[in-house]
Length: 310
Image 1: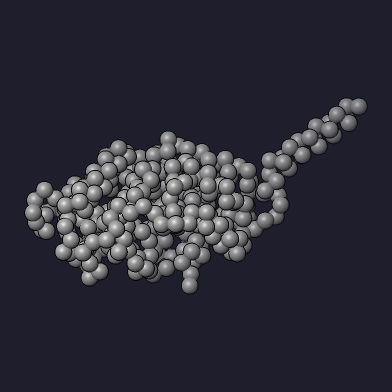
Image 2: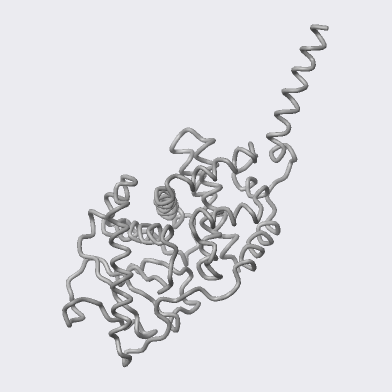
């Protein structure tokens, strides 16, 4: 009888472990087609056009209303920078490094812009420019809705209405690139699709993740960890993605209050969610910082190839 009880306990424990690790034990590994299907399903559920802060503009337009909208955007960005500056060591350095941030609006495809300020001047002193791109100028030449232009020393960002919990992460991410340039670090741009690019990009993606988690009161990482506990162990970080479902991405939307976002912003969000899942898995399963860094860079490079391949 005692032996039977022991066997019963062992069987119960085994069945319990089998249940909580069902995803991990089913042998599923990453399949590129599955990621495409998941991404497309998510984006199809977010069809339509996002709400634009500034739609159409030209150098001859009346600029009063545009200027007011741009200054509201600037105020929102600066407020977020101040509130979240202490999130990480890098976020503190980024905010400390740029004291004179100005807002501008692109007015033509040849790069002409107007800097918004109380002064009537286009030569207002600044050490970093936050430049809004109106809808009529936001074409396919921009690989992302937010980027850092190293030549202009400006953050170029589509003039959209962003979720309050997403915008700070975008600003900090691009300011991180600006900070590294200020330090003299030379990194190839996103158009290079290189492993070298991923070295810096991983740091900025992780900065953005930390900002989002702080903005959501820790809910972003908590849900990610819950998701990964259901998945269990994977052979490679990318294999975790084989277990992610559409509902998981929608759950992230809820945490970021981004359910109303449409195709443009959601295109960015799905990449951020997928990277976050892989990066969090790496953080939870690799103890050495050196290993974490190299694994994240590999994962980032893998995603770059998946999302931006021809």
